[in-house]
Length: 178
Image (tube, rainbow, N blue to C red; front, side, top):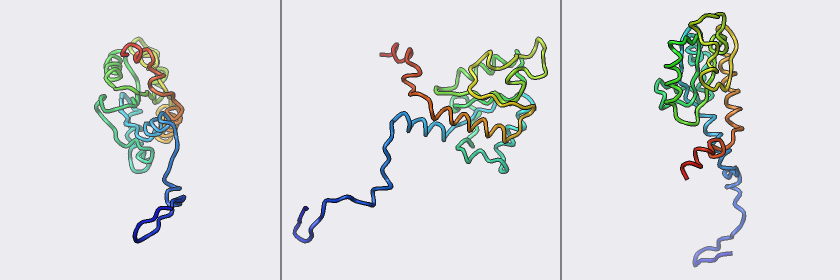
């Protein structure tokens, strides 16, 4: 008990604080922030791009998941959504955009063409974007519906939520720096 001239203050449990305190690990908090503020870089190369655009419309509304900020600058994006047929001529541009994106970054292959070359078995079509860059989530369909893209992005959020800290993931980088 603390007393002053006019009043007596009791040192006790303050029930107003009960709902305002959260205990967690730093990496869990960072992963929570990352998964709820993904900024996609749309790489629309064919018909799947129309479904990608529909996903941002009011009917499907990916802003519910914190992904409404479509960035057309790779330096401001953290999710590359490759949608459509990737030709060898376009593959270098996709790789350049991927390399310009800051870490951490993720890739979503949207549709049969981006995932496996689709129906095109020709000398001009890359048989899956995973031959060029690492893919985190594959979305099937030709073209996949906007609901499928939303489900794929939710799976990506689940994956991000369980990731290890960046220092553990990029150990060789941090060893070189220190």
